[in-house]
Image (cartoon, rainbow over all chains, first blue to last red; front, side, top):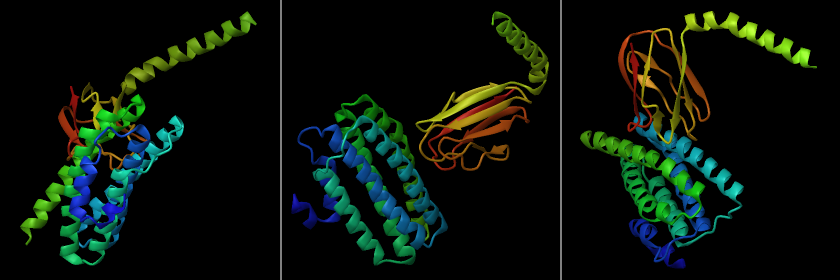
Length: 174
Length: 108
């Protein structure tokens, strides 16, 4: 289990996407969803206070709002379903990767911070989207949990596109 | 007892009759749901004077924005925005927060 702690941040995301030799249970999916949102909320909070570019700051703020909304709905659903989120290798890897990202971002400022935050958001949303499509939606057993994943998926697509367009506009300024 | 129910029915009927010409003059009210990052229905045909109510059923904010025509600003989760239709024409609109969301208000 602890092997993830020593893995690099980039490796963590890959592990997160492919950790399941067999399908995760609904309790494990619930933990992955809540963790994935929380990781992006934490990064968004940092960007909201630390980003220098106004659009990056606004994006960070939106990530906090959108992912908090998804988590509120996810927690309400699992409470209703009496499912207790169960920590697993994927959710642990996401958490460790999020902590590494924050640690790295803390060291940066100005345009370097903006770029590193946005680059990570592009990679992160792509990885989460892959996990949603390849693992979480196909594995979800409960119909309401599956519909929740299907319903919020377009938000991750929109966030990815938004982050990519920010990445392109920051790139032009260099 | 039956008399009371009948009387209540007559009062309601009278109210409905009195109310209907006013309602027609004020235009119809149309509902658009915002659900799973989609406007449902995606295209809505209305007349000037009609009212359109967009209700955000998603757990985070959205906007209903047709640049230069109308802009809801942020509509919080579970909240609605009403718009009284003015300008005729085809008005494509978007969510400024989620660029993959698109709808059209067709005003005849």
